[in-house]
Amino acid sequence: MFSNPADQKLDFVNVNDPHVTLFLTTFMDINSPDFLSAADAALKQAYADSCSPPTNMNIAVSQYASGSYGMLDVELTACLQSLSDSLVTATAKFVDPSAKEYIPDWIYNLPEDEQAEKIDLITTYGSPNVFSGFAPHVTLLADDVNTTELTGLMLANTVPEVDSLVSLVGFGKVGSFGSVLKNQDLLPPVDVTENK
Image (cartoon, rainbow, N blue to C red; front, top):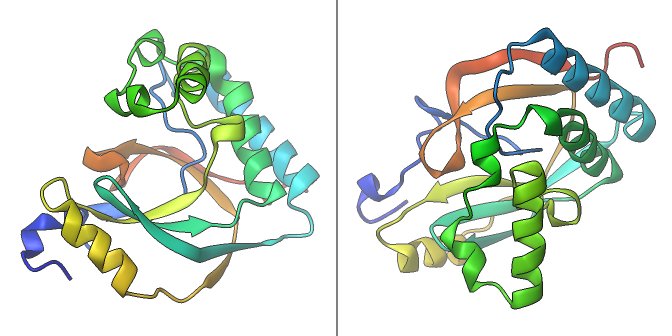
């Protein structure tokens, strides 16, 4: 895709898993029984309340480039919003305090009111993109060298819309560019369809 294949920083064959992130932060100890119990219960309840009967998740309703990333929008359904909100609320007390202190540089490029809102979300939950800031997407491309080419690729290529169902929620280790690493699950995936 890129004129220089090394510019693509994501490798979905060997290294990265395509995914929709519900909550990106750093937790203190996700192996604690309390964390797993809180996450499991919240996700299953949110699924039962907002995702039943199972609803499609529409991927590629639009595509865009933002900075170093090429992304596919995922339709923001009540199901996805509920899964994200429930996970954030149930696991907030397990967030590593350092995640609540680091403010990414891009935040300071936002309008003042949006900047204040994002900083508040970070200092409270350890992530700027939760609740009303949750914007589900799948990252396809990452290039910190040639963002002009990345933008051109996203605009020039059409990705067909895909329907998918939510059934598993995983907790993964994240590598460069915020992409989940293959075969490095931090916990077994939660089958949110159980006990509906």
